[in-house]
Image (cartoon, rainbow, N blue to C red):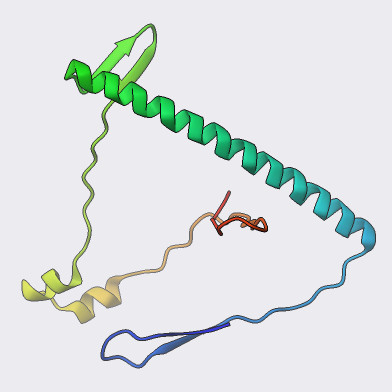
Length: 130
């Protein structure tokens, strides 16, 4: 797969992906397919549970709103409205305020994240999973 990305006035970059075919034994293939099918079944069950959880969470939030409070505690349960504000760097604003974007870009470092298995199930939208 080749994808062209045009980033403004800069030269477009190209992303290239290669595919390698690997031969596996029939027993490994069977074990892998068995695990993948069980995984797909569990993912389906989780989606049903997440949907039910979201419905109840919405109902609980509506009840909390009726009280007019941001936090409620009852019998060890706690319901809190969390409304975070995050900061986002704006390169355009930085330059308009007189900042040197070239220096900023030189100071930005790549940081590795925790690796995880990505499993795609046939017939479902692609999602990252852990």
